[in-house]
Length: 87
Image 1 (cartoon, rainbow, N blue to C red):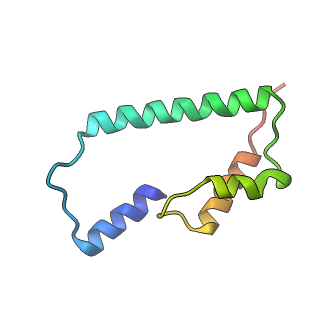
Image 2 (tube, rainbow, N blue to C red; image 1 turned 60 degrees about the vertical axis):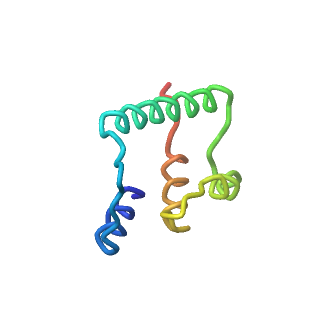
């Protein structure tokens, strides 16, 4: 969602960067962030942490990014609430 919003903004404003980031480096960083997120979620679930309605308010507050609306944040939290360890 963030990427789509940035792309839309760039197209509307014709934003150009003098030195765009290297695509291979950016992909590597995203892969690392994804692996880190999955590991953190796994550790939280093993520790018994639940992503439920009681924690959703604090989770929404933790997600900040200017390109995310409150609706997008709620969708992220809803997706997190669906994650569980298989038996």
